[in-house]
Length: 511
Image 1 (cartoon, rainbow, N blue to C red):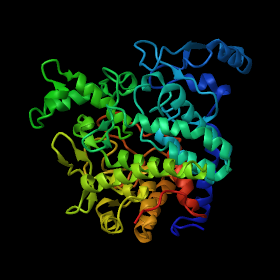
Image 2 (image 1 turned 135 degrees about the vertical axis):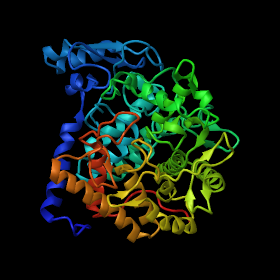
Image 3 (image 1 turned 90 degrees about the vertical axis):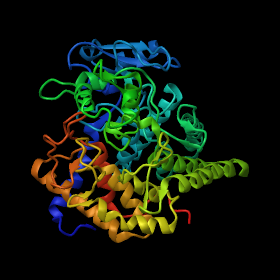
């Protein structure tokens, strides 16, 4: 049944049909090796492109396999190379080999992304594409096994950064659809390994037990340097430094990330820029100017997702009839994390969950839509959820949920709304019984996407929630200025929110 009565039934059906028709277009596998290897962000569509293979794989066997599958004209343009360990390449970048099918977001994003895949999975499962959902999840498990983590994307320039961790939720969703216990058992070690990744010294704040985003690697992010240019030909870093020149010395931490003499970012500045990309929120002023203090924050989003991972792993151990001590150990990890998050991240005077600023030893004051994640993850108290429901109006615009309350020229701030945050906020509010607020967010976003679909025949990665349009022209000043079409996670979230035919299988609150 259509939950948004103002949308005509014909438009509703057209939108659902479009979403279903897009999955094959966005699917990549070995038959599409050349198409997948081409990267609009770093290379042209002509010439030879590279696929790099994990040291644990046999490059010769993969060359033979691809030579059998691909037409000669495509095979001749591919170069299969061994990857020299888990490190960023200094020269020619390429695609990281994955053995199976997966779904890409679309547009300039022609590779498998970490947290995008969770929202894509919502739509695949709603559309009955269980095999493709399982295969997409398998590729992320493969990344953990062969590349050390779920990667930001399966490109060599992303080897040293991950993405918001939603893999455990994907595994449980696929298992709920298949009931395959052997598959669940095989996935568990890689989930535990990925959890360890977020507790490595560079991610873990030992004083609190909470984690932070912290990408590795040196210098500019290669894909940014190569492609994110404006009409005047300035790349993102040039625009950023021009803006920072006017900031000095307003922010005391800016001297650590910007060199005014050389007029460029410092090594710390580039590391923080890479880190904001690991967070998935590239870019926002939530972690300082354009994220340039990103390693100084313990984020609500990351720690809520790690809490979900800990509960998921406990539930999987229970499903597999592991020893009670293993189940209890993981439940204790989740409970301990929740206790610290209640102390550090809940601001009772604001009625919001806010990131913890390590440098200032206090909570941030930057209101952001990730404040709803503790409801989705289920660790918020009933009282906190009730207060959060009262905050919906602060984030509400004609097109739905504002990402933040600040218009900064960054795409992850106002006036923009994004499908993933709409989904997390909506499902979180529903989990605590705040259906009216959830319905408002849901219907405004669906109505905006449907209206723009009727106008353009396309779905987009983001929308302007204030002007109710997908037109971002002149509104984004940092990062890439385009609004990509396709679009994987918008498709998935819309498919899920428009269905609502059965019970949602996400986390539930604990008290």
